Amino acid sequence: MTDLFSLGHLNLKEISQRGNDTIGSAGVAVVGLGGTGSLAAQLFVRAGFGHVTVIDHDVVNPTNLQRQINYFHGSSHKWKAEETAALLSQIRNDVKVSAVRESLGSDNLSRVLSGHDIIFDGTDNMLARKLINEFSVAEGIPWVFTSAIGMNGQFKAVIPGKTSCLTCMTGNSIVDEGGCSALGVLNSIPSIVSALAYTKALRIILGEEEKGEIHFINAWNMAMEKVMVNRNSECRTCSHHDYEYLT
Ligand SMILES: [Zn+2]
Image (tube, rainbow, N blue to C red; front, side, top):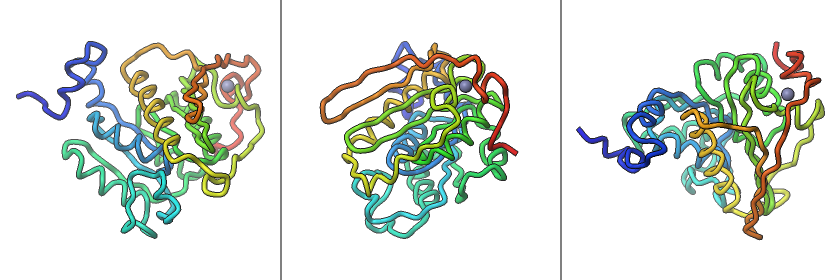
């Protein structure tokens, strides 16, 4: 029987039946269900990933509706993880969706993220990204980080043992950008970043080459560039495996 859900992908030579089968057996964890995590969660489900876990500890705020496409005015003050999971279950009925209403920390990281083939970062929190980065490197699970603020967005993939990691790029410092609502954010930029970062995650699952570049987007100027991030042979995380946040 033809898989009508997947027909669009089956007819692409880059994916086809073989890639579709790989996608169907893959599990993804989406951490943070804000602007970038919202769209990515939908795209992973629409692609037919076998298992999609959505993780967020927050409730929907009316100020989120400008850009976080999984929520509606009736979602206000409800849990993002549960609202997203309810929406995802309406898209396809053959994808296993799990909702985790927890804040990611060193105490629950392994329980929440283990068993997935890739991790999508939709947090706007550098500490959470550092945690994900260390877990990813320690466990050998690739991850993609995203960020969107103002007119700008960025994303980068980390393939443990192959590409640079987050610490290679940022060192050991933690710098937070501040909240989107306070600093301002164009409502299309999180979805633009999300769609491209999702595509990067899909490519990784399908075994396409990943070099570890960071991609920068300015939506207002319609500009996009990529910059190579080389591995740091003295990186505390991916070279010395000296973990600061994992317990
Ligand atoms: Zn590194």
